Image 1: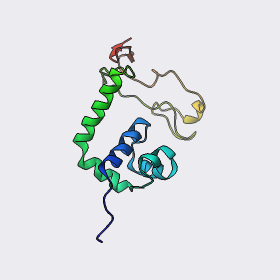
Image 2 (image 1 turned 90 degrees about the horizontal axis):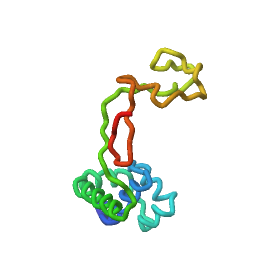
Image 3 (image 1 turned 120 degrees about the horizontal axis):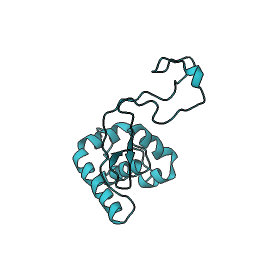
Image 4 (image 1 turned 60 degrees about the horizontal axis):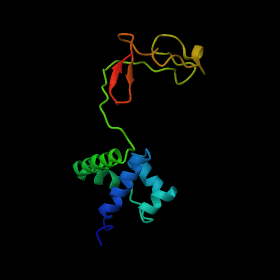
Length: 144
């Protein structure tokens, strides 16, 4: 035999869809979960497709998977589980809140040691008009 037989497309789709639902989108993470997580093992029928297989499947079927995800969201919307709307991104550049280490310089020129363990206002690192976007019940961004 020239190689392993392929995995069933339904198995691969189940793993990808469930992975996205629980916040696991990486091919390597999905492969790891197929060994460690009971739900992934069940959906994979105790098979363990490697990350290259997940990646290639995603690339080959990207358009169809996109349609499937839209259908899943529409079903959730009809069931009242989610509200779908538009979120506008205004392109405001924001610097990070704190430095990764106490010796690293912050984007505003101060040292990370001064603010280690503290967090400032969520709007503090944003520059621009002085307002920040607010997401209301409609899911649309509006100015405060």
